[in-house]
Picture 1 (tube, helix red, strand yellow):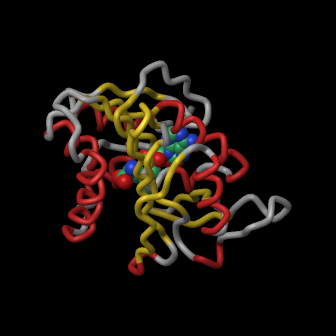
Picture 2: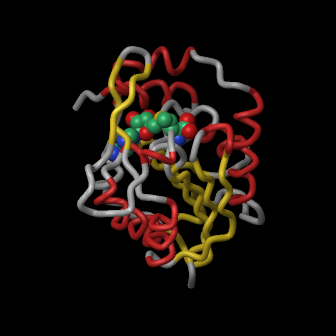
Length: 207
Ligand SMILES: C[S@@+](CC[C@H](N)C(=O)[O-])C[C@H]1O[C@@H](n2cnc3c(N)ncnc32)[C@H](O)[C@@H]1O
């Protein structure tokens, strides 16, 4: 199974991310790790090359399971974060046997057609222990690309490194309801002005 990320994995890896972006993301990650005992299990859906998130989680003493549908991204991740376990799978279909103390789906679920988002949030709730924290991002590139109706087009495409990528998402109010209906209480809902409609979400899995 080759996808667009396989075609850009080396460029993605070589591309040095802006320091302030990395600091901001890792600050969110640290919030969901707060208070967890060393060795607690953390899930990262759409982990890509493992950098910076998986690497940071492992460096903080946690056990990380990363899931990604790009084989090439995972080859780099295995090299970058050899302590982590990686699963090559579609996050919609992956069968997660473990229970996790925290879970992340950062800038990845927006590549999944929105008709699967509700099931994805439920899968994350099932994968988490009660009180487990979830970090995810909702939306992606432009508020105008969100839609609130099931009958609208599934999503849109955009170019990156000369290749086409698919994005999908609901209007933020709908996404929020779906996350809550899956069994989460929202603790943080923060619009990131620098990325046009992208929302950082931290949620607690209700007992
Ligand atoms: C924008 S990238 C990077 C996300 C990464 N969490 C980060 O912040 O660096 C999105 C990643 O999600 C993965 N991805 C996209 N759709 C996926 C799916 N349905 N299942 C698993 N991984 C997926 C891609 O292969 C890619 O590695």
